[in-house]
Image (cartoon, rainbow, N blue to C red; front, side, top):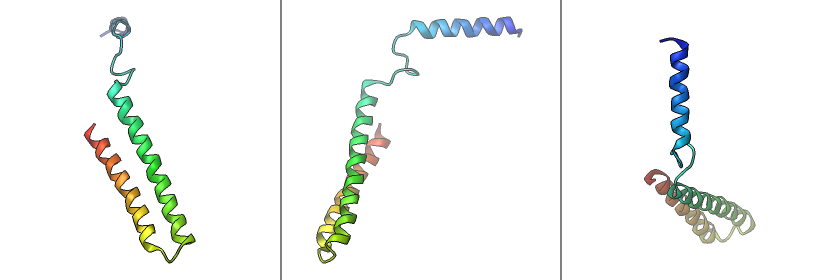
Length: 88
């Protein structure tokens, strides 16, 4: 193939791409945006939960039940985020 033919093929592909509105390569679907937002919120809550667990561990060394409850709660949020990531 000559370079002119290759340039023509590329130009046609670009024109076809511009003609399509909402191409999957340029705009994420609404479902993708909502799952990304949910995952981001869950991830933030996970990090805050473990930060709280670490603070509880050092601030209240006698209350291990509270530490484990907050820590396992944060891990539960991370597991939910993990499931959402692989299901979508």
